[in-house]
Image (cartoon, rainbow, N blue to C red; front, top):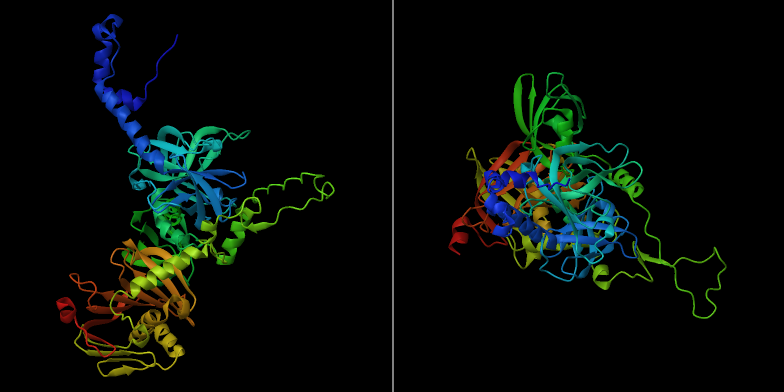
Length: 611
């Protein structure tokens, strides 16, 4: 006896209509013509077909040059940026070749990698109109939701037509501890849609064809790499947190609170130990305090807390809510790195598979090789994954630069140039930037007069009847270290120097990526510049491109001086209306700006608006 099986959702959708079909002999009778599908069932099937059609074009089939393996990926922007797994790109090195369902193969270059979260960003070359996926909110996903996995299992997509599998989410918010390895899968999605070797790095979509995550680990039978219905995907929300960092071209790390926790017997997350050098400790988090929320997410167990922290990049500043001795505290904390940089690079090197074997050079037509068996010389490697028989394409070579701590420093330089170009277009700046000199006047909240002078040879501030004029960089350092109002001067001086010198001359400068400002989205672009012993961070809004805050660190175990810049809503390119200096979460000097003279030419809000 045979039977016909229908998808459960389809049966539910058809509902009573299917029952009606089965009860109507006229419909079932062959003499009355072929059996017709219920319109609601047909509509559901068409929606599924349409969703697959929307999703397939953005799926990437990744191939390691030289036949050393491959995997999958997914395009996330029209200019060719695509997400995949770290363990997919690591055998390839600096470049790979990628196929799309349009039948074309494109060269691709590595951009940035997250070896802890098993993510990598690559860039396909040759077009600026690539099809790309629409990102979903993976936190809205629930167990039981229909999903599809599209990719290149077993590298079967030799014709560049990816494989599509269909299933449900078996679970959400899964956490897998590293267990002696570098990779940590947090807050990930579990699916019974067929996932096999080669699907790694590829997309998992919801039933509407929106990107839910990046396929990663699979659970296989012990005696063979055969799918057993348990696959895992990195949530797209975690990937969104790291995309800005990956665009920096860096090798990035994940975050820790600087404290250990344990689940309370009656529910809750209690601090069991904490580093006194951590920002969390400075914000009042102590032993036995109960952590309630991190980055806006409620946590009930130690596992849930780690599940949230592991989805955040190192260096982010996020909201923290905790209860201590009956008092509920809402504050902000700067997250630490899980690894020291050298430790991260060492562990990453240990986690990387060996490079694919090089092709042997063909024998000479007459007589073959003169070398005895076992002594043949390997073809010299020209780059991380280039050799004489498989050279790096020129387009890739022009976009790749090796540097310690970076997957590809060339993309960091691109972001640095983008930053300084935008900075010089906003107030205060002039085309003749080597003669910048500022005289700023205003009043504090309590009515005291403020005068600030920032030139290339003089820094000074007068608040009421108190004047400060630092003479050396050591004086600037001391003002930040003492957390006094003169900490505004190194922030303004760094702003002025960056306009004049640019990133190349300022000092060691890198684009860090994107992060919240005071725990709030949207994520801001962050440029880090070192000026002697001071580290300066410029945070810019992603849409207006205006600098909103400048942070100056003297001691990394102490609060930086934070200069917050507020501009008129109706004219964001006008002079700032307030300059607010903060340490931690406290404001020590708030200036309502009356005028800002630039090179002796007076500027004020009214004049700028009139222009």
